[in-house]
Every structure is written in structure tokens, then in C-alpha cells.
Image (cartoon, rainbow, N blue to C red; front, side):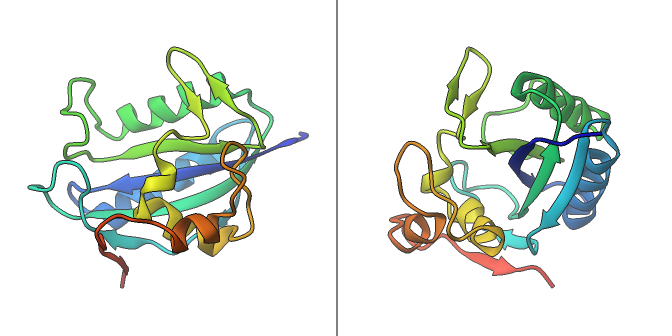
Length: 166
């Protein structure tokens, strides 16, 4: 099968065995027809950002090759989240067993009712930028025209902690 598209996906969890939840999700994505995991960042323990009175997260980023169009890939990721126990009525930015976000899809810019690519908040999130820099520090944000390394080094997030997971 031909995998013409390069996609970066954020993976996170803060309920249960958080690291294992991330690993299971990555394996599920790799088993998904039309997808192949090409690279994985290390996992990081990360301080919550919006709703701060919750458990810390484990986050990472993967790079996949895919034949799927963005909307189809998004639907598959939501299916994986639900299969692993994520509910549909969860509090926004609240605790979750699994969170899968399309960060970049090639150098596409997409804004539909259900999907925004690049992810609209990734440039303000150390827990995304740190693992992204492990995989692609020179990747250029198609809207801001800056590399991931530049976005990370200029980030103003009051020093939210991102610690390598043991």
C-alpha cells in the first residue's frame, strides 16, 4: 500500500496506566489499515495546562505515514479513543484515558466544522512542542512559518513542566 501523507499525532493520557494507554493507542494506530507508525518521541510526564486541578498527563508525539484523508484519519482516531474507554461527555481539557490529536497533516491547512489542521493550540503547548522537537525540530508550521524548535524556544507558558517519563 502507498502511504503518501506524513502526519504528526499527539498522544496523551492522565487516567489509569497513562504510559501504557499511550503505547496501546500507538499500537492501535499502527494496526489501522492505511496507517504506518514511522517514529515515536519519548513519553513525557506533563503538568496540566487548562484545568490544573487534575492528575499530570503522559504525552508524546508520533509520526505516521498514511493513505487516509484527514477526515477519515480523524474518525479512526476517535474510534480508537472510544474503544479504549474515552467517553463523549467529558469535561473539556479534563481528565481522559486517551487523547489523540492530529497536529500536522503534510503541510496542509484545514479548517472545517470538526477538524482544524494544524492543531490550533499546539504552538502554545510545551507538552506538544517538546516531543515534536524530538522528531522534527526543523518542521515548519505552515501558518506561522516558524520551526518547532523556534516555537518551543520562544514559548511563554509560565514554565509548565514537561519531564522525561521513566
